[in-house]
Image 1 (cartoon, rainbow, N blue to C red):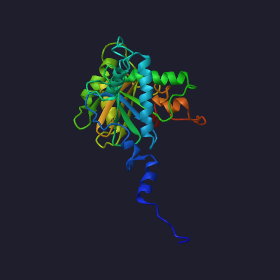
Image 2: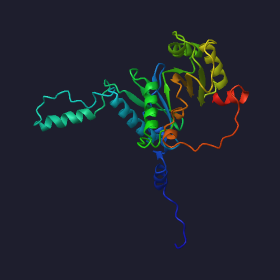
Image 3: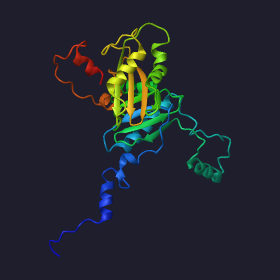
Length: 289
């Protein structure tokens, strides 16, 4: 009938939704990486991205990490042919070998694995404990800053290294902080200036101020707080039911807080204004963020 409006069939509606970053009727970030639990003692990197870009961020992160670990010699063996003397003329044997290589091998460990979190814009990449997440992220950001023209990412934003993970329900924050901070503050050497930068997402048990106080008490008064000219920056990240901690060097802010998007495409600097002094209340609050 002329002028009659036709409604879009249900299947067409679902198809249209999937084209807008959804998969199987679920947001794309819920189906982009394997559903695996993060466990106490895990090592890794928390990676952030824009909402709806989680799947692309995961693929991009895997590619960036692969290149970095390959260049450092930490990623090897996956593509090595163990049977170099095999008769190259045996086509059937080669085909069978390639097919076997496509099958998942539970005994074969990967140096990293993307883990899906039940929240948008955030993913966790678990690393083998032989890989230092602080060194890996620092190297990636330093290389990006030195060579901004060779842009390697579009979707990855901040990468926060996690030296170790604990579950928030059972963690003893003081004991955890002692373990992570000992190599940097309690193993000899002169006093170090430090700052603390906590981040809390989707968790009501931990609060920024209490994290700062607890960690500062563990560092001790022999090490002075310096919010702008620090030697070490202590990162504490809480994501839902996990808490991670790491210690990074004095160029953390120079490397845009490990935000690759900012390194490759820095935001324009605002006009210079008189800001709070370091000793003021406003200045302290600013650098705690």
